[in-house]
Length: 339
Ligand code: COA
Image 1 (tube, rainbow, N blue to C red):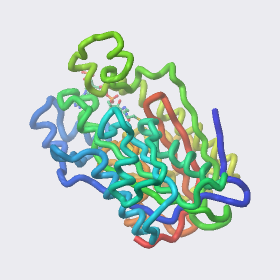
Image 2 (image 1 turned 90 degrees about the vertical axis):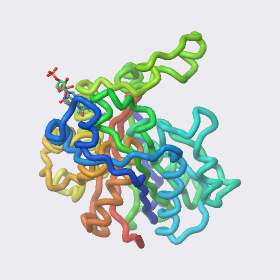
Image 3 (image 1 turned 135 degrees about the vertical axis):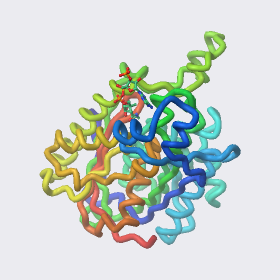
C-alpha cells in the first residue's frame, strides 16, 4: 500500500470549503413509482431517503464550478496555483473536465487535471494536492470532487439506481504548518486492479472500441456487484483508517469524527464496529444525498460543518472505497472556516 505525508515543515492546510447540489430532489417514493422497489427497502438496506439528480442539460462541470466558486469564496481567494477535479463522470471522455472548470472559475492558464479513482477520487486528489504543496510546486490548490452518476446509471437497474445521487464538494488547501488547525496529516492509498469488474462501465473506452463491438444497453451503463463491493468496502476502509490512526498516533477514542464515504449506512456502521468506534462519531449525510461518488466526502464535510458537528481543532479521519478497486484514508484536524 502506498503512503504519503506532507513534509514536516510544510503542510497542506484546509482553508476553504464549498458544495453544490442540483435542484431536482428525488425521494425513494419517486423511484418506486418507476421501478420494483420501495421506500422501506431502500431506507432499511441503505439508509438513503432522498438524493438530487441533475436536470437535462446540466453536466458535472456545472456542479464543479458552483462548488469550486464557493470554496474559493470561503478561502477568501480569487486564484489558486492548480485545479484538481476528482470525477468518474467527466463532461466528455476527452478532454479532461478540470481545464473547463478552471476556465469558468477565471483560472485560465493554471494547470488543471482530472483525478480518476471513482469513490476514492477525493482522497487521491488530496494526496496529489498535498504533494504539490509539500514540494513547493503550489501555494494554493483547489480540489473539487464532482459526479453526476444519474447520467451513467441505468434507471431500471434497481441495485444501482437507488444508491447514487449527484453533487459536488470542494476544498481549498494552502501551504502552512503541520501543527495548525486544518493541517492534513498522513494520507494512505491503495488499489487492486484484479477487482476492476466489481464497479464498471464496460463500454465507451479503448477495450470496447478497438474490438469494434456495439455496446449493449448493460455495457453502456454503470454496473456494480453490490454485495462484493459492500464486503471489500468495509474491510478496506477499516484497515486504511487503522493505518492512518497508527501513523498519526491517534487511538480510536481520539478521533472526534470519522467521515466515511457515504455509500450505505450499513457499511459505515460495520466500519465503526470493526474499529470499535461509537456510531455517534460517524458523519452521516447519505440519508439526504445518497452516494455522490467523488463528491461524497467533501459534501459530508460541508454538511457536518454547517451542522456545527466539526469544531476547530477536531480530529477527523476521512476514508473511502471505490471502483478500481481503490481505497484510502487521511487524517486532519479541522480548521476554523469562513462559510
Ligand atoms: N429494491 C427492492 N429489492 C431489491 C433492490 C431494490 N432496490 N435491490 C435488490 N433487491 C432485492 C434483491 O433482488 C434480493 O432479492 P432476493 O433475496 O429475492 O434475491 C434482495 O433484495 C437482496 O439483494 P442484495 O443484492 O443481497 O441486497 P443488499 O442488501 O446487498 O443491498 C446494495 C444491495 C446495492 C444496497 C448493497 O449491496 C450495497 O450498498 N453495496 C455497496 C454499494 C456501494 O456502496 N457502491 C458504491 C461504491 S463504494
